[in-house]
Amino acid sequence: MSDASSLLVLNAGSSSIKFAVYGAGEPPVNHWRGQADGLGGAHARFRVRDPDGGVVTDEALKDSDHRSALERLLAWLDDTVGYDRLLAAGHRVVHGGVDFHAPVRLTEDNTAALESLSSLAPLHQPHNLAPVRILADLRPDLPQVACFDTAFHRTQDAVAQRFALPREWSERGVIRYGFHGLSYEAIITALREAHPRIAPGRVIAAHLGNGASLCAMHDGRSVATSMGFTALDGLPMGQRCGALDPGVVLYLLEQGMSRDEVQDMLYHRSGLLGMSGISHDMRELLGSDAPEAAEAVETYCYRAAREIGSLAVALGGVDALVFTAGVGENAPAVRAGIVGRLGSLGLALSAPANDANALFISAADSRPVLVLPTDEEGMIARHTRALLS
Ligand SMILES: Nc1ncnc2c1ncn2[C@@H]1O[C@H](COP(=O)(O)OP(=O)(O)O)[C@@H](O)[C@H]1O
Ligand SMILES: CC(=O)OP(=O)(O)O
Ligand SMILES: [Mg+2]
Image (tube, rainbow, N blue to C red; front, side, top):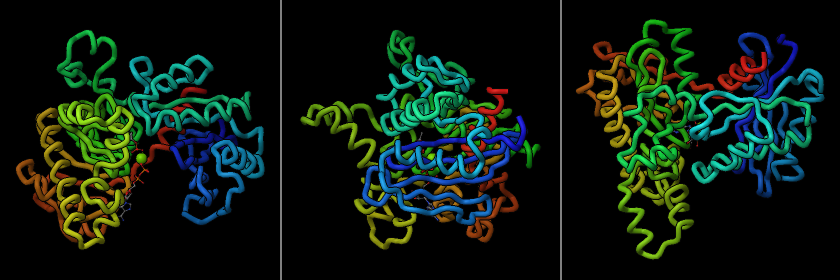
């Protein structure tokens, strides 16, 4: 495969389709990134940027459904790289369940199998897979590949994946899958390439974005992670509750809430939004002087620090900590609120480096603490290329 051919990468959500276009050489090189957002609303837009952030296209979408957005994207690709130059589409699919441990070429059968996992990732799975169906219809000859958020964690020991439930349920796939695996793989790949002394060590990565989780890695392999059976577990997130006493769910049901109402509350009305009553957006909470905003941020940092302590035990110590994703890459106050609680692990920040969002933000006498941009799309491009060549 040559760089003259292109790979399309899609990360589709409920109201947006994020995409990136790569040259198909080794390694794939990014040419454009973009998104169709506001889908389903009155102000859907289609935007494309070059790798320097320059705006290539920014226009309103006449029709705001996912199919129209993909039609616009394909038309733009036809004009830009040409129909024959597009070799494949690689998709982020959040849940691979028991059966999918590595990227796969999508067929009718495995697409249906992945759709059947939708209740395990209601925020993501149906939206990740809708474009697969639409593209299969619009471009039946285009190979499509699914890359899973869960796959990277399948190397974990059984003890890390087990719930303390009756064995029959573990055997039926009720285990800790873990998510954000493409992001953690991108982080370990970046460490291997630029910081080869850190990569093989005991590394904890904190992916703090809309969803948030932690991953403990040793020798570049996932050892433990904070998310479990679904992407609700672990850290409090923008709108999701994170780890919760399961007795709370029973109590809510007993109080007369329906299953769907409980699901809506835990996925959409909890986390930073629920605690603050103001917003799910960390930027807004950090800029607010309401005490509820400060309490929500404090709980977020406290819980992340506690969970980092738990992962440090799973690793038998920690050699480096990496922050990534929207909050991790851009919010010095959150990093300070977390690392300020981790002195007992030998971790401390340099305030000026942290405030500058520098690559290394640790104090001189601390183990390394880094800020690294994640690149889920780049990882998908690499997997898609590898699977097809
Ligand atoms: N400068 C910033 N300060 C604080 N939080 C930020 C900043 N920039 C982005 N964020 C947070 O990052 C979150 C989005 O993270 P991101 O990784 O882009 O999410 P996703 O890719 O899952 O949609 C936003 O909800 C916002 O709260
Ligand atoms: C799995 C998950 O939570 O993903 P995101 O952070 O994109 O919502
Ligand atoms: Mg994300």
